[in-house]
Image (tube, rainbow, N blue to C red; front, side, top):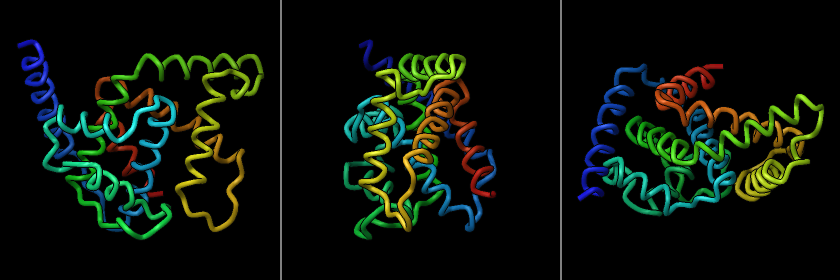
Length: 200
């Protein structure tokens, strides 16, 4: 009974958040390539920090009533494969507005579930900065940075070798972003950030 009530509450929240997103500006055609890349990178940061995989993402889709848009692993893989930076052409497809909104809600739902860990990691990052120490000197941040850099290099095409320093900066920026996306209204923040950044 409690689980049913919980699912019903999630579904109501998800519907109101979906309504929120439909009222925000939609991206124009020029912005799509950047948006596909950014969504995949935010998911990459989330999975490398928390250790979640496609099962957790699909479970979030079910809880949010989005399984019609993200029904299975193949659909999820295709959505992520739409990132133009990814290696291999197999699953590449155009991402539509509804799929992008679905990924935004899934990201924020999962970030909220792992908010404590994200908060701890960002707190450590601030401590290290105050003490003029490198973030990778702590186990949590070191493991996250290593995992992020390794998976990025494994999955993404590179025109020239991207430096570890640049990847570390990207990983840490995405980590701080995740903290904002895990907060109430995170879905709006992420959607507006996607449009704002892709216009630059």
